[in-house]
Length: 444
Image 1 (cartoon, rainbow, N blue to C red):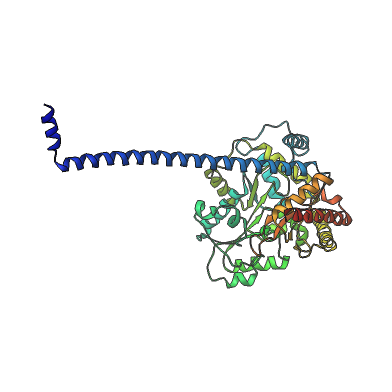
Image 2: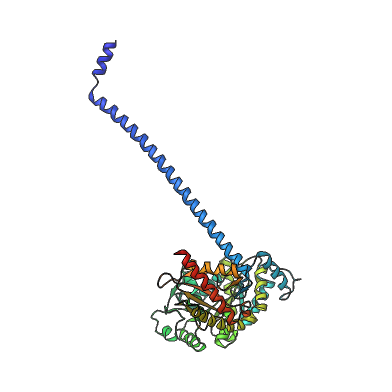
């Protein structure tokens, strides 16, 4: 039996041995591949976890720095502006409760779907702008989307002429086209609003011309009154309607030397914001002819803007109209003093190249440019607030164009800024530049 078995094994065909060997190698390779795949999956999971940990760590650091900046600016005794959005929640609620009784009857029912205090705010805005009607919107983005969509339907032309630095182009993720099916064109790319001649010479037809007053991303710049009248007339010659992005229209009157109704009368519709200059919680209004506003209310509902109750935002807007609006001419005038003193301070501190723009400012807001990194300048601003109780600047940002290493910040002069003298500004610039130089040296 043993010999037969041995004989049978010896009699095995070579192909059988090769097959067994191939199967063995295949099993070995399969095991190796399985181990390799398991190892790769483990590495991928480990890498993903490490990346997640890194992102969480970076987010925690960002949150800590943001809180540090917020605490420094909130605690500063002297500031050029103190936006309500940077106040603690308790203080905002207390201010709302304290001011509400002066602007409306608190014994009335709260609003429901736009009546009550919301309707009261709409009437107040329409009166202030000299328009037939106004509608409250939860956001300015929605208000303008609706206005431009309504005009496109009425003119039969879905093309909107506006500046490439206008808010819909810069800060709304292409919403005009994506949501409303509108098309935008740019009569000029200069860092200012278009001229009348540029409107006349523009090769493409458009149904609506939108003008942002002031043009924020160009430096809060405004045309002269004569230039504004001329560009509106040029649009009318092309049978286009005119819509004003007046998010900051409230502070434009001193520059134009005209009241709000006369400015608004140039346009077919106007949007205004309640939180940017007036310190409200949120919200905007679209003002224009009664028929347009009725249509806008329908689209507001379709866009999801028919909120059940909005009385906190409406009350904050009414308070802003009562408390902040009257002080704006003084703030605009004093911004010119502050801007001039900033320029003098930078020259005295040996800052080298700098720019205060526009000089003088057209409103109570303007830009400051310096040839340093944004992180360096923001850190210097925070340290100045922490160490001296004086907050001259807030966040700095890298320039979108131009040579690297140039940054800018936006300066706002509100009622807090009215307390500053030109000498106060010059001294604060010297303190700020000392910290900028120290930051640069410490990073070398």
